[in-house]
Image 1 (cartoon, rainbow, N blue to C red):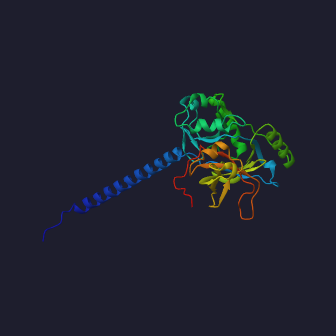
Image 2 (spheres, rainbow, N blue to C red):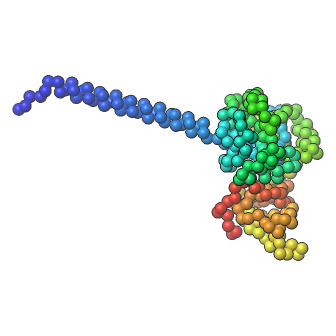
Image 3 (tube, rainbow, N blue to C red):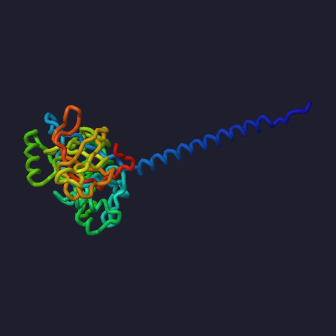
Length: 310
C-alpha cells in the first residue's frame, strides 16, 4: 500500500480555505454591484407624479396650501430631461432647461390663462420651436426628492427656483385659507380672472405618486378625459359631417360628445385613439357623466393604437 504524503491534509485544508475566501470575495462584489445598480436605477427613474382627487366640502382646508390650477401641460423634470405625466419625453430647447438641478422638479408648462393651446402646441411639436417655447413658463409646485411634508418642502422649492435664476422658471405662489367660505371666495375670484381653478396640497403629506387626498383640485365644473373610438354621422344641419364623437371612459363605459364640438372638428374629426377632454356636471346613478360636452383635444397625450369601434 502506498503511504500518503504527510503534507497532503494541510494542502487540502489550505485549498479549501482559499476557495471559501474566493467565493466570499465574489459574493461581496456581487452584493456591492447589486447595491450600485439599485442606486443608479433609483437615481435615473423619474418620480411617479402625484395626482389629484376632487375637493369635497367638509375637508379641513386649514391642513392645506392653496395655489392656482394652471391650464397647461404637466411636466416632470427628472434631473436630466422633461417628461410628461405619462412618462414620455418632452422635447424642450436646450436653452430652456440649461442649468437646471440634478434633483427632480414637478410643475406645469404654462402660457398664461386661457392659452392652453399655445402650451400644447409647443409641447406636441417633434422639433422644438424657440418662438413657441419663449411664450412658456415652467411653474414649479413641488420638489419630489425633498423630505418632509409639503410645508417643509416649500423652502427647498423656492431655493431651487432661485438657484436656477431664469425668468421662465417660477415657483407657483402658495397660500393658506381659514375656511371653506374663504376658499370658495378665492375660487370665484380666480374664475373671474380666467383661471382654471385651485389646487390644495396637504401641509404634512410627503411627496407620493398616484392619486390621493394629498392633492385636491377645485373647479366650478367637472372635467375628465376619454379616448375616441368612433365618429357618429351628423344629421340635419350636420349632415355629411361628424355629429358626435363616440368616446370610451377609463372604466369601459361609452358616451357621445356632440355638444361643444366645433365645426372644424366636425369636418375633420380627431382620429381613433385620440385623447379628448370633456366637461360635465355630476354623474348619473350608473356613473356616466351628466351634461357631458366636448372641451378640447389633448394632443400632448399619446393615442392608443389598440382602440377599435366596437
